[in-house]
Image 1 (tube, rainbow, N blue to C red):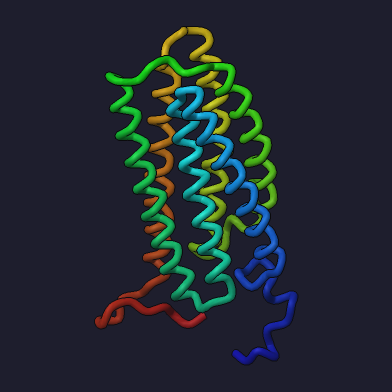
Image 2 (cartoon, rainbow, N blue to C red; image 1 turned 60 degrees about the horizontal axis):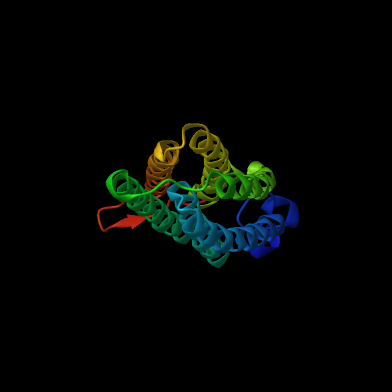
Length: 214
């Protein structure tokens, strides 16, 4: 296929879509800012759920940066980038799960007020990003990975707010720890989904992996 046949309309909904790149830049900025805010609030408020959400924001920021780097490249590079992002998401999930389990015996009760306020702010931010990326959810593995990350973030923010209500109502850390654990499992599951689709876009040819013709 020559460049002359790649008109602007044909790139709509693909990694070459200018709207896609613009959405990624916005998502990158939002996630970077929310990581800084949530990690400070999570440590100050003693909330593992907020810290888990902050790490998710950090991972997503790196993922969006990678997606911007490979946007417009061949499917092979986009699929490999998706493999890296899927592995990162799964590893972060394992870390968060281990941290939550450690806190069962060594953690204190978090501050419900901080959890609730920061959780609502993060939810508004992520809901906006998710809506912006919704139309790109059925693209290749790289595009789908971005949608999965934004969707997981929004779900995680709802869970953090519910955990804040639970901590306030029970006076214990259990709602916070349970939500952190659920978020960790969601991250691991999302990472596995991304890896599976990326691998399906890489077809074995006996000498490693290559990508079928587009």
